[in-house]
Image 1 (tube, rainbow, N blue to C red):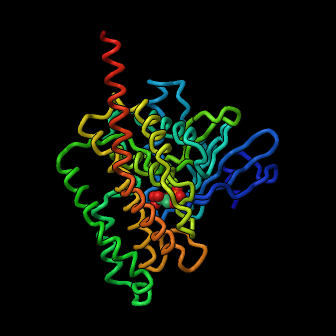
Image 2 (image 1 turned 45 degrees about the horizontal axis):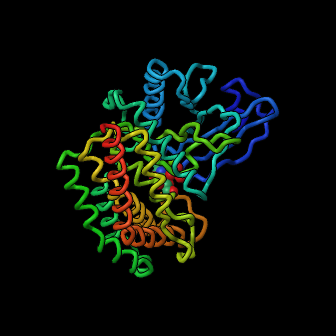
Image 3 (image 1 turned 60 degrees about the vertical axis):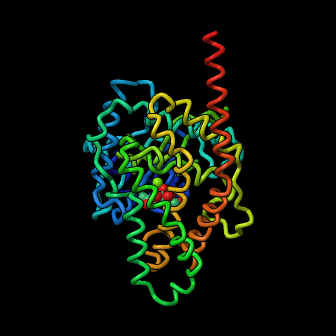
Amino acid sequence: MFQAVLGAYGLNAEQFKIEPFGSGLINHTWKVYNEQQAYILQEVNTEVFREPQHIAHNIETIKKYLDQTAPKYLFVAPIEATNGGDFIVIDDHFYRIFPFVENSCSIDFVHHPEQAYHAAKQFGKFTRMLCAFNVKKLKATIEDFHNLPLRVEQFKKALEQASNERISKAKFAIEEIIKHYHIEEQYVHMVDSGALNLRVIHHDTKISNVLLQVKTGLGLCVIDLDTVMPGYFISDVGDMMRTYLSEANEEERDFNKIAIRTDVFAAIHKGYMEEMDQVLGFAEKQFFIYAGNFMIYMQAVRFIADFLNGDIYYKTTYPEHNLVRGLNQIDLLNKYIAKEPEFEEIIKKINEDRLSDSKTILN
Ligand code: GN1
Ligand code: MG
């Protein structure tokens, strides 16, 4: 396979080392490198991305726009195959190659608030750079990807069709999901109110999707652009809350290790708002904290639905993997909700400080 794929890019597989790369749950990724060059090779999971050409369309359209409006902005698009295409298809498998950004690295866990700050700034910057871009030019790479009511529907359907064994194993998780249906209701109200604008959203803002400068740890750019499509900012902010606030991530089986760090919350807010404060409307900003509820809950719903469906979507490595992930996210959700009063205080304080700063300037 590697021979044929790399060959389509004029590269000889024999001259490279090829190693699995990253920890994604959907696509297959490899680092392809030798002393002179390095690339990231990816096979797109077409069960999940039914129309992979939509991914290529979005990336290409955005790239053209950024080349004109912000030529210095680092946007990592796939390289061209020798036939001029952005991707290649071999035996119905869909591959693309990215340049490996030099002197960059990524991390899998947020150890310090600083890292959350730099990442949040990069995701905020990405949406800001594209705030005047016509979002309607983009296609949905996964239809209804973050449509919470639909995810809840899928969960209900999975529940109807699941084996008794799986239902009884997931009893507590199912009860917790039902107990939190109000998060879905809030979503429906929010969308109906028209408070949120459709924007160019990344939809997968985990820390490993930001490249950092090796020497300084400063943010360089965002990567993994498959789910870049029209969406609401709560998806990106919420996924940062979901994946940065606790040092233990969704894979952790010891839930005692799941803990919310308020300093990381403040860092996400600072980094994202430094870029997006002027872009988001007043009504949108009111959903900043809700974003965490939304994404953590939706991920719990998705993991548990997949467990009930017999593990057909996410890669798993042990029998109850999706159940444990779902329970982990429920634990995180409950801990997040308990911290909300503190989050509100943090935001209130930031706004008061800003107000007093502007008064000082006026005086
Ligand atoms: C999937 O494959 P990866 O890790 O980039 C999923 C995200 C989930 C994430 C949970 C297309 O992302 O929505 O948040 O797993 N991507 C898709 O780890 O479903
Ligand atoms: Mg991804």
